Length: 227
View (tube, rainbow, N blue to C red):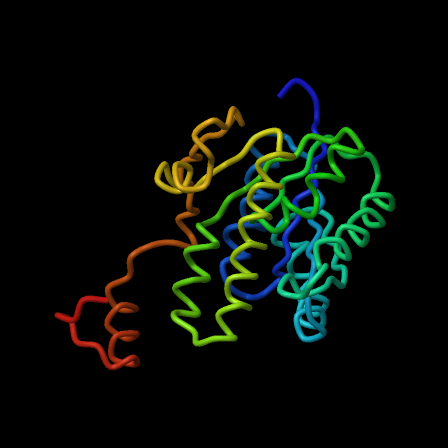
């Protein structure tokens, strides 16, 4: 890159010891090394437990990402008016940060919160779509009797609204598959988008036959069981 770009990577998952290490922190470090991006990570934690866990991991996260990592308390996305409340929080966080050139918003909800703010401040935003949130939610809750079905339908409408807000306010989008892009983006959308290749670090993702056997034995699977 001809000049250093300052990016803000935002997520609403806190800093759990799961895929965040590989999908966020390692990604940030590798893109900084490869593209020269100067990153800041903003981890929004939507519960007291999530916030405390993130605070306890923030030093390790900074070491893994090799950049600044901040944790802020947010409102659970399932709560009514959470987008409005979290957008107010996000605006305060943006004001405290030094100048940034773009925002990388992980998930539809994050893009829905930050998209209008980015438009207001003239900051380009990348919507990082990780999955079909509507389909995942419907599969998770299944069929519900009345009146619980009313809450389910309300939640589906909110998820769809987040997707439309993300699509309307993003400057570009990244999807994990062509099928996801076709399922999420409307046919008439002219939003620039692409499918980034999977660049998994070999020190974290590798095949180990001994580890495979040990974990299968621990979980009660045989060598012939399909997982």
